[in-house]
Image (cartoon, rainbow, N blue to C red; front, side, top):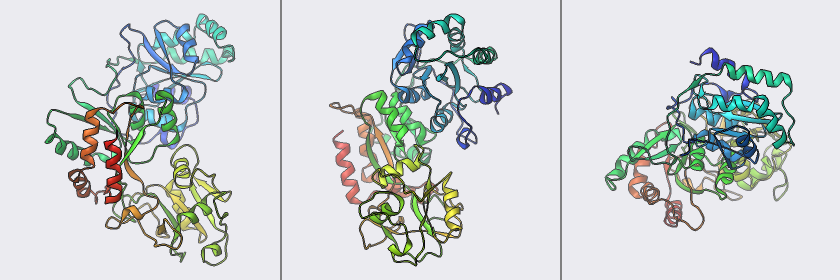
Length: 481
């Protein structure tokens, strides 16, 4: 439980409004590690070009120009001590940092509109090395240097500066042990950081793989997909397993750090359903009284998006039902699931003007259950969260069917909005990936690896093995890495 100091910091120093992702349970955080202490003793800081001025205004800092989005994954993984960001951190960025470090990040304004972010543990404490740095930047001399170097920003007014200094005076510092950058642990094992849906599958996978490669050892830190891409961008995981697609902030951060995109390998289909004893994968829901047999993906686009080929569909009569305006519900277009769905399933088209953004998948289903004219696209739904008044709508890749559901024993390759267990790898152009990563990917896609996935299919987070067509395609991609 956070101490009173942590609560003060949350309410007074964190930029941005609170959200559901700022609270609630998270996996037990491991001790923070400082990968940002250079051989010279300087602390690495990162962000846009403002990072140069920050490093010049306080001694003991070494700047890394990786862009504002690129700084966030490096901060999350502790390869920079401070992120220099000319904006408030987004809800998704805060949630990712908190999920890994245990506490919400500390936000310190140093100029109007320019913030420094630092990791906090669950008690709101920061690396004690940062206290003198922050105090120097907020001193009269530090502020004078920043005013000259960052003339495009306005200085903090007297009240804001005094408030920031008071907060820093009460800031609690802790000793954070140093660790060399990279995914090689001190015991020689290779780190895998990613989705918490793999807590039962991955240990069995690694145990089975060890029989083929006994000299290679892995350590899995599985606390959520939101931790995977920051770790891959920071180079602290050998690859990034995710139970979802990349969100835009994931991709932006990786691109700014690396200058190219990660490569995706699909290893399994994400869940199956409809289910009453586990997670139903993302699906389109209609009111239980709606007699519609199914929809094609072209029709899905024409209902949920604006400007799709063939024209927008706004009335149920266009789908063979009784006349009535279609009420469309879905996730917010905020860089998370809703944005990723729009990009990958709606070909990047804007949402329809009739689209009503809801705060959660549960809220989407509740709206559809209460609305006979409603249709909704919802994310993963836990068993028991789907109300009785909705049903999963069968879909087809082509007009006229056949319409299918994402059932465990069916041809999952025919479900046109399949989500996957994705493995993202850092594949620099013209260079191969690490041999250990390639060999483990081969095993995950082998008959033995797919059989292990099949043994866990009925678990709450169970995945479904790839069908032959998709398996052959993914094996070819893996061999080319």
